[in-house]
Length: 598
Image 1 (cartoon, rainbow, N blue to C red):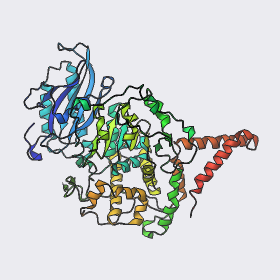
Image 2 (image 1 turned 180 degrees about the vertical axis):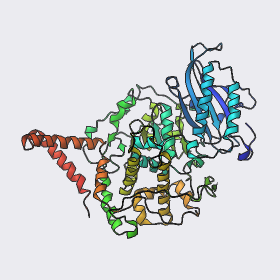
Image 3 (image 1 turned 30 degrees about the vertical axis):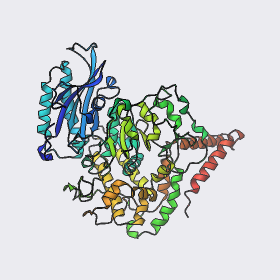
Image 4 (image 1 turned 120 degrees about the vertical axis):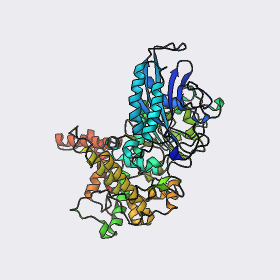
């Protein structure tokens, strides 16, 4: 590695690496420029101890089935202090020239760029063009193109500004369309520094969803420098222990959702929770165990979908507090609530933070979330599973495609199933903390409506300002600025719009304490929640609409439809549907009792 000097005098791209899958040796580095080990040649398979997982990250699980791109983070090497950002393009290809120890007609290979700067989008665009030409040669002894790639990238990326489009090249619009109101829950989960595991396959969708969520945090491209400080396994004896699936299979019990008819306390509809009778992890639960089922779909019954009726409990209190609020903050019924992002005059001037050590703007952003053992790992290889239970890791936002990660639910506070847009949360108290307030639901609904409307024109979709990618990021920037402003001025009245349990939990996090311990020149004006206001009938409809996709909501809807049809056909509720009528009446009475004004 080149000498460690000042950042501005160091090249942005550290190495170009080729990783291949050997049918006897597994994943291994086949070429690196400059060499990963200074005393070795370009074709050495040796790796620095800090980067021993590089081959498994650059050539992820299922690489033979896809032609994709993966993002990953590596820990800094000795003598350095910053995260190393990896972008890898991989595919399976037929060989034109085979080496003596290669016996197969096709091989899996990846070309990887290891960089000092998180320009994921820009690096991906350039890497895809070069690797296409490299793979089309089908002769991997031709390495001149890789050396040219190294020189070209260092020439073009040096001095590049960290901007949203160049960093992420991802679309928050797609995230909103998939998760809808739950996007705000993901945002709050990371603010609380919880252990969040994203799960989906293929890996391209995984890293895309995870990094898109991070792109909603203002200035986060400057906040990842400490996001991969972890220790690797030091010996083979400590490696992952895989237990045979026949051993302890009884620990994975399938429970039907019909077994749970009692109301549940908080976070319903937007979250999913494990059955209340689920047995606690055994003493050997820290070992990675294969699933007793063959697919993730077969384990869906282990998590009950809940409706958000209890979210209404906070509504009367919110309404009462808003009635006592200053009239300047209460919009009139004839005035629609809109969000107009304001110019961030301080964001262009970035200075080193006195406490966080990150490059901050005048608002104190980015927040020091990914510091002091809180990891950001867009993709985790199976060999890194020990990090989920490492005592030196206080939390993580990580992505995995292997079902074994998903089965170890007790190691995460929340599991995000990207395909089904579900957030699985075990702790009832955490679901209560993350319950969206009325103002939060208005904010999320505002985003969803602007993203989903006017999508008929495929040529103009996403090109406008309102509802576009940068517009969505601007809304979350305004949301976070408003939250910080309310906390900065210690306005309890304004903080109720964000949820008292959430605010209390956030105040004890590392990132808030770091932010609060410093002065921020831009935090002068008091900015309320973008959608604060009096509780109305429209808010009742909004809350009811949030349960349409929940299991309890579907049950309630089916019961009401069945009863309604019977009444229409016979003029009265016949005996056969008496049970459905009673159930629906009881559920509706409980539901609307929480909406009653004090």
